[in-house]
Image 1: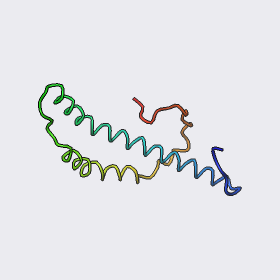
Image 2: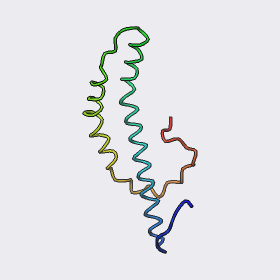
Image 3: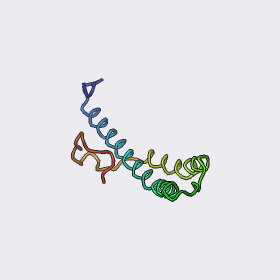
Image 4: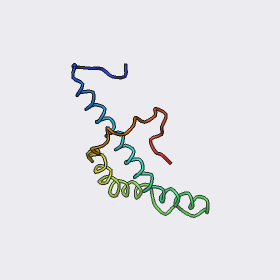
Length: 101
């Protein structure tokens, strides 16, 4: 089944749907943030490989940059409370991608 009810309270269902939509919105924000931040690094590495020049950053430097620059904003996006009008939005289709282009 898609949902298991542990009590007969309709408020539990509403709270679960609200929490699920908040989590999904947080995932969308996180993925959009990560993709926008790392596109420059990917382009730089791709350019270096195509041009035949050495890659400008070592893997350890890339990991350090990810740890220092991405972790705090990512945690903040994950801990952000949901919008107050999230339950007024229409349900999303099941085949909708996480990141809308």
